[in-house]
Image 1: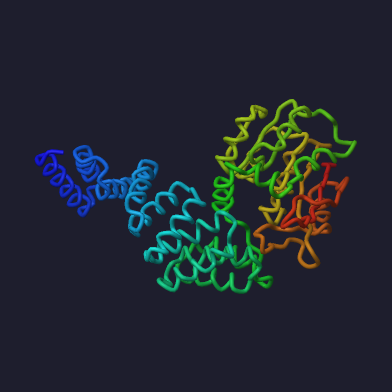
Image 2 (image 1 turned 180 degrees about the vertical axis):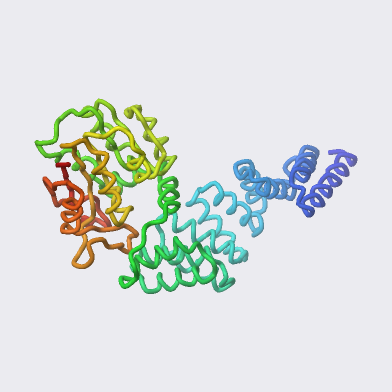
Length: 400
């Protein structure tokens, strides 16, 4: 490299650092790229360009730069912190937890770093390991609403319900989403009034879940509700009907089972990402991103069969769903659905799992009140949790 080229590289680098300080990240990236072209492989330039790419919202472009920087500067905590951030933004959770831990070992420590490390561990199902880092983040800054809420999630999932409730209450006191956190608290405080799951929560949950929904639900949790529900349809339910509604269809797990029975098959779900997956199956005549109540209430053509597999556990009180379903069924039409079985107590119960359970007598009463007759109930597991079966009920109701 000539002296002139070196001076030009130094000038470009200084221009980049000045632009970065002024948050002109596009200009900074251009200057650092120019410096790197004049002085290839210089670790300080590679690191600064990688960090700038992060600030431009380009973690995929930042990643190889930051990997090169950490290889050249293995003891640089700031390089590892930046690499950890790139991994986190790309949702590479195992890499994120390793790179965050490495940065921490080199002396980098902050509430933000601890929070990202905790989330990375949580996303891998390592909730117990995450607790320490959520707590450290909150020691550094006890106003972190996100950390209080996330710590509450981990504690709730690990069975520490009283501590989880304290965390949710703290998040609520600090300004967290009131509807969401009151829902969380209601699941942990049996004396609390029953609340419905916020629509935004349900949509966000299943949008985030869509990419590995079936692998996790069927493969990991042993979910069988969709299959058993259709297989156990009573003999009185015709083998082929004109119009079928898959209510809360998700990724379309019921689609292959319903398609041979349906002249016209409609799927409805609140989650756009789930509907995209269901559409890829090519089995449905119509797929709609809608709230289930809104669809049932739209005054459209009646259905001969409505199926709701693993749906009502996220709805809670079913008075409105039964009333609307009764109106949308043909006389003699069928409603088939699954619920989790509630213990002694109220007819509808919000569990610490954030799912609702329903008592048999509650369902029988609702059916009678809405011109429906319970034809069959089958008690059988719906899925498994930590290798233990979740008690479920398969319910088949006919409009009389």
